[in-house]
Length: 212
Image (cartoon, rainbow, N blue to C red; front, side, top):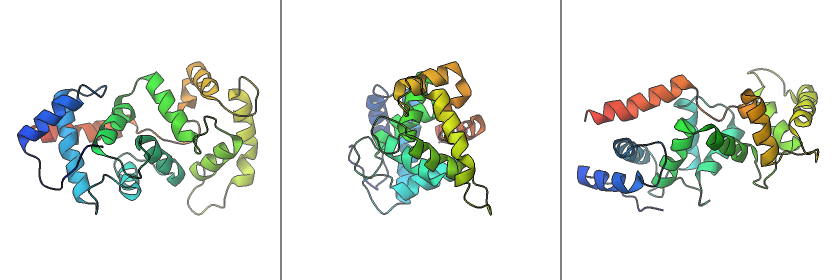
């Protein structure tokens, strides 16, 4: 993980770091990486640690900035960004994660969504994981837990996506299903921002910061 300091980074430091990092991440050019570096340091100022963004800070960003609402899925997104599993998302992890989160290709988004939905990281999405995600995604404020009502939906979904019939979804099952019917990419809950959220974030970070 790159060392982080609370002190404001100089323009030269940002440019030098952006030049290096822009060669390591996809979908962002050097200027955009520079904007993301500065934005990350602003986000870090609101935390009590210099190690990176913690789970609660990331949850807040995912909810308020990108419109995610399912706590289970937001925690899974955090885990997917946190490549070294140290409990914090460092600057490199944040920018690398955002490259897929905001601008990923279909193949990159398929891999990302599968990692999010595979809650226990065992390389398979099980009916228990699907049920856990859907029961919170489909629950409306004030309503009772829809557990019983969605069990049939879970069975139907699993049956349709389980191409090798082993009663669970492998990455190959998930990838094939998405490429056959694209709208099942986020079948188990929203884990990517919609277009308007992406545009608002990029305008704030890339266009506004570029003027300063």
